[in-house]
Amino acid sequence: MLKDITLGQYFPGKSPVHLLDPRTKLIMLVVYIVALFLAVSWISYAVMFAFLVIAIAVSRIPLKSIVKGMKPLVFILVFTGILNIFFTTGEKELVSFWGIHIYWEGIVRAFFMMIRILMLITGTFLLTYTTSPIALTDGLESLLGPLKVLRLPVHELAMMMCIALRFIPTLIEETDKIMSAQKARGADFESGNLLERVKALVPILVPLFISAFRRADELATAMECRCYHGGDGRTKMKLLRYKGRDYGTYGLGILLLAGVIVLRSFGL
Amino acid sequence: MAPILQVKNLQHIYSVGTPFEHVALNDVSFSVERGEFIGIIGHTGSGKSTLMQHLNGLLKPTSGTIELDGKSIWADKKTTRQARFRVGLVFQYPEYQLFEETVYKDIAFGPKNMKLPADEIDRRVREAAGFVGLSEEQLEVSPFDLSGGQKRRVAIAGVIAMEPEILILDEPTAGLDPEGREEILKNINDYRKAKNATIMMVSHSMSDVARMADRLLVMSGARLMMDGTPDEVFTHARELLDMGLDIPEITHVFMKLRQMGLPVEPVYTVEQAVSQLVRLKGGNVHA
Image (cartoon, rainbow over all chains, first blue to last red; front, side, top):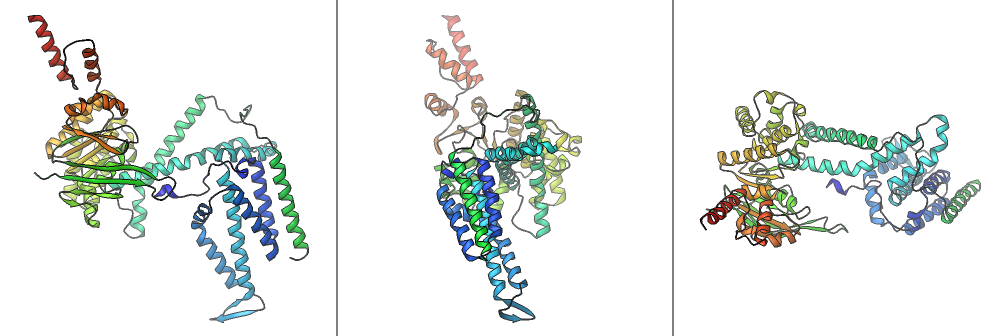
């Protein structure tokens, strides 16, 4: 069923990771990604990996759901791996056939690349799994706040993101319903060649788009009825405030980044 | 006569083996005779919609069987597909599924999927449009230019055009004005009479089902709680109210009258109420 897909879905919880300020988590993700790209050796990767494992353990997100979320990315992972194996040149040649040479360096590189992507995605999942969409947009809005000076409509962007996230489950449910209804009229989505299958999507897409526009219209009216007119002068009920655990997390982040940089300067 | 549809020990569990596991149907059994008009009542989440989606093979039961003319609809792929056409299912707010450029094409979607010849499709589309009271000119307009009530009728015609032996409707009158409701109910009855079709209708309007149905199925908490004529079901007014269901307004009125000491019998349609009142009045005049 469509309902079973999890892509950055929020898992409600009360773990220390859940309770962190969304800004902390966003910045930590950036720090983590930078550190990941600075890491060059087995040791620094091991450090990064340990950091990630501890973070997952603390967040109490079941490993199963993280693995499940990885499934759609298997293709990208395999693709990256193969590309690196075949197109990296080095000194230790392992095999060569039909003019293709595979080097030991290529395999090592492919392995690192795949691990890097895997850890990067897992880190991102950790953010979206432990942060509700509303908190996430709140955090983003606050972090991007300074860009208002450059006339970037930060509040509007955050609101758009918030609404988009909010409507994903609604639209999935709607798609399910429309699919059932068209199936009841004998629509067949499972057989036929590619062209026929694409054609079979029309009876789903048209009603789905119409209903999305209808919902957008209704939402706009409802927002106007409550005098929404963008971010100017709008105050927040729940202000974001850093707490002790946020400073602690920032400290850890700095330590991690510094550690990876030091290791790198030693060529590790 | 053998029943057209037989449901035996039907059970359905959503998301088996996950924390979201949820029993939607529990040991539901009943049979349906050809030509019957069955009303299905039950509050939200009682399993009505899940039940309906089993009857034409959209959902596969966790356990139990559904037999159409004595043959399980899950016997093989062809039978399952056939069940989709023999049991027509009209969802709630069906107007949100319209997608074609013209009303004609939208109604023809079902028959086309049945791979019928062109002239047969044409006949069915025109006949179905006739059942729901759409005019010839309306067949050529875009369904999105019609009013809400008309869209609903186009959507119902889209299912009727498949000429299902069993027509199942989920709250076909939800959100319509009284006039629109009456017309839709009349359309459904016309189809039933013309094709000797079996109708199963889910409704929250107790007066509607009391008036239209020969038989009522009452669902509550994933189980089939009652199965009987409206007469039989509405004598259990107390139980119905305890299940969070309503009873027809006129039944309410007469229960009150009885409490006030008037010698009236329980009723569930306006016609019965009138005859009771006439009897009462007549009695008083002669006394």
